[in-house]
Image 1 (cartoon, helix red, strand yellow):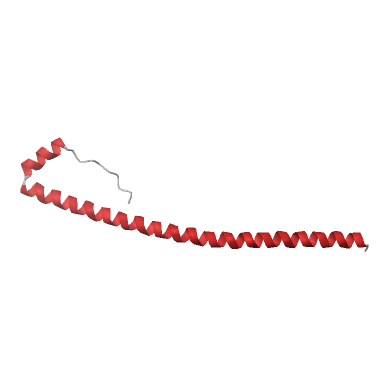
Image 2 (tube, rainbow, N blue to C red):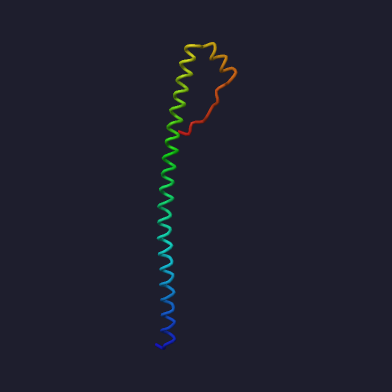
Length: 93
């Protein structure tokens, strides 16, 4: 094999090694960034789940209060419902 052929092969090997190094670096950076994003997403999901739990508790308390007030003050509750009808909110599950 002549010198030019060997030089061409060496150049190809160097370029492949350079590309491999760049891809490895990219993968390392991507993995680190994914870890950060995953951690932030998990904390946001936990916060939203906590907020949903709090809102469910608040709505249960309000329903209980309405029920108690309806039993105690039926006429006033009828008047109140006529003036301020309940808003139907679909339940997501």
